[in-house]
Length: 608
Image (tube, rainbow, N blue to C red; front, top):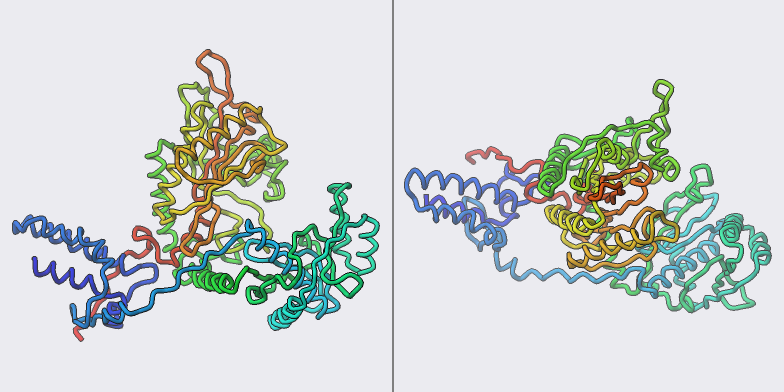
């Protein structure tokens, strides 16, 4: 038994490349790492040896070495030029001499004002270059975005990929001229006259929208070029760099062309959008390209098809996810863990219908505030029914079904509830933007003095669940009361203080978005960082003073009176579909050991 154990441990030290090249019939399956294979093999070996120890009175400590040695084995380097179980080992010296990969370059965000100025100014330079090269192109809008900028153009002929190189070359010329950016403020009539003279109808519509929103708003344009000379201008509030020479041409790239409806309205003209990226240095651009290439390699849509996890069948309609057997296995494991974690955390599980009377959605306010995101109603026996876009009203009705006492609170109810929301076809994107998805919804009904502890419990559960899937880095945002809100100042202050207190007790750093909360309560948003540094919005903890008031929720207080409970909305995954997409991309399909749809497969090997 000792000899067999030594052989097993030696075999475990084989490198991944040696293992895979040893025999054409022996290979690792997609979604199963070498670590996962070795873990399974060694745990099986340990179980066999424990049985042998009982039968032959072999010391149990010998058997335990297999499991105890796992961390050391899985991190151990490949053996030298030897043979182990008939497999040729990799040359350890070659591994040792391999150069370490370069350290990643930190990439700034638009919180860096200089980078924001670079991106906004580069967008203007690109639009100027386009209109110098293509006289029939009309401009619309050109904002900065998270990784760069874009500009939308109306042009009879479509842009091609080769046009991007031509436009970039023209941009480099403009940058080399060090043309100044000049701000000019003018009246509405002056701006309108200039725009009409330039035959830019989209700009005229933008001008009208500015004045409609705020009649006293200043009308400003930014010029590129010297006064009195041929220059380019656009309606803009800024900010910009001082002159084009401050734009680092070797840190700018034009990346792609896409279609976009004017104002996002499918009934309006289809425009051509040119996306670009801009950074402060060539090194940052190179790092951005590396991340983009890695993101393409990890694209969950391609991996989902390759690993046979899910599909979206156009015959059934866009944005509707089909979970295939392998993906369904992973989903079942995710759901089982989610249920176990919630049960351990004091939650009870609910199951609610997929539709309800339209009157319910009117009472909740969803029909008034979120009608654009809801599918059309259906008629059932003369009554209007609505397929549900959210689970919240169903949990509220469940609360209202019984008389509640302060002794019953807090109530923690969770549901994996499938909801349906209308999304425009042009916005659908794999698992990230769909029309039917399952939310890991939970609602907590509690007393005001219980709020801080309940939020703390949600944060702890959030960390437990996210860590299980390998997400350990977060970006946290606390959003406070907006100008228009429901609820008293006192309850808002208590709720916001409870959120701050819970975050402080957790020891998490967070930023504050003053006035960024929903009209019905303050909230905490948690973004997770994936394996290549991207941030994804997942978890939300939202106080709600609106639904308890709309539905007249109450509990009997210690003095026999009637009080309104505080309601907490809470999601950790956000949705199973979107979280699964993030997980696929973060792991590149090499899931945590407990999740792969195929843990281990034994393949026959011939005597050859």
